[in-house]
Length: 281
Figure 1: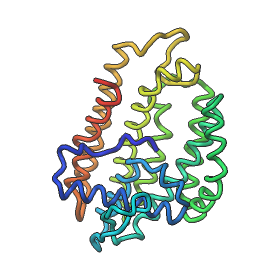
Figure 2: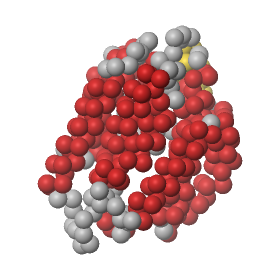
Figure 3: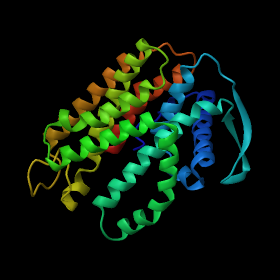
Figure 4: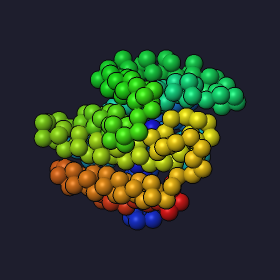
């Protein structure tokens, strides 16, 4: 969706990084297979995290195999043999991108809008296919978009209310990786915290553009603001750290079968590294 949920690569062991890449490449391949080659360009690390989590919760693991990348046939890549597990994350990625594309079409003007309009026809059928395979994800994302649009039309200035739709939709999607009530509750909490983190960071990153374009942003308090005030930036940092800490508490309750060091790297190190890099702190 946004690419804010990613690993801190320097802190990964070589074998962990190779596995992380294998999951990314496997998800990319699955998206191309199911939704067309153009869909591969929409993949973000957020859904790599989702796929990795789904794999980590499974009782069995079929390992990896070597294969050729369609974009670079001379290069050999690792791919996961558990192809089935990538169906849900790839559908979620496709559905989320479709709605993001529609939102961009409504908001943008000029050259950017023309570019989005050219892309749109390619993703209509892909979205229909993904929504047909996973109607629960489609309903969750559609509901999220409706709630978000309503809050934006109201010019909502309450961060808790503004971030809630994104937090809720990630909560629902992550819960789909669980196979019993307890796991689902923990995954819901993890998804909620990560969704809130994504919303806050994205709003902070988009502040300058939204101010320039006179678009809605929960951090814009009044017309004519020149920049994000330092005191607001400090509050944003506090909120982001709170989301990370709460996500970590939920993560520690999960009974993971494998890949805990990689997922732990994302939660404990990657989220902090990403927001500091994006906000230039």
